[in-house]
Image (cartoon, rainbow, N blue to C red; front, side, top):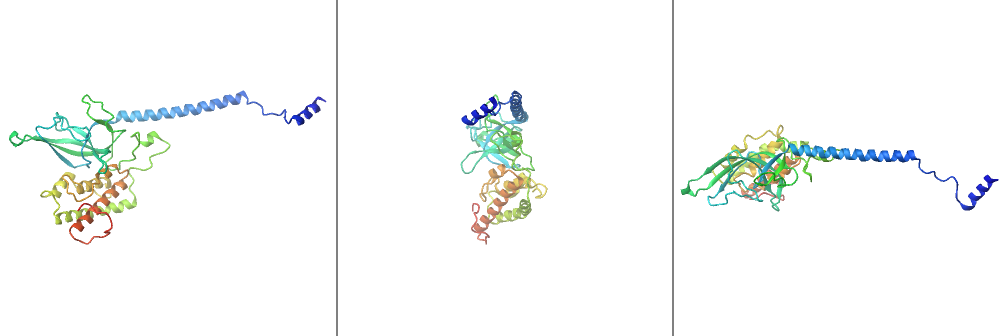
Length: 328
């Protein structure tokens, strides 16, 4: 019969009439719809991310930049410019105060890495507190005093936002809470949670773990020991040097209530302006420390290293003599 013949033919040529049926048109439509949904969802998420970043950027302050010194809140920087010098009062990295600078002007000041001179991504706001001009008979120099305030990190790259008539180097900045670390730094310079919402920042800027709490609790006593050694080894550069620095920094913050502020205080004390040369420069590392715990680790290591160096210079017994010590 025709059915048996067909069966015989199937066996002879190894092929079967029961081939895989072509995909139903409805299935194709479903697959296309799914792909479209995925594409639409991805585009929607991307648009939301870009809108969030744009909104964040629009709300950011654009500040004029100075490249000079990695400083911490409270520090005072006196600058002297000769009467016959550059009228723009140029500093480092192509930055300048300007000929028309006045009391109350604000800038964002960035320091440079001690190892390679690279401009740091984090810094402090500075305010012009005083401008004084010496008499012509005394040289006619201009003294401009800057006072460091709140910390910030640059959004994106420094100098890429020159939205000013004078083309002064400037940048968008993210202000750092005085009780937090600097947080994660990203290529885009934005909050990682906005760029990758599904991957929150790896570290919490407020993190302050048990080890850091213990180290922070030791800092007040270490500060007193450090000050005593500085005085005993006659390392103050000016009369009442420590008292002057303390007057700029204010009262020492509480290690439990305000550990991040305490870290800034200790850094400003052992790396003061004017300098003493008794400790390694830790302010760049402090400004870029991601968490509060990181900040405490930086300053605890800095002050203990300085204490060992001061003890050695005084001929006193030193524990952990194999460790690195600060400048003698």
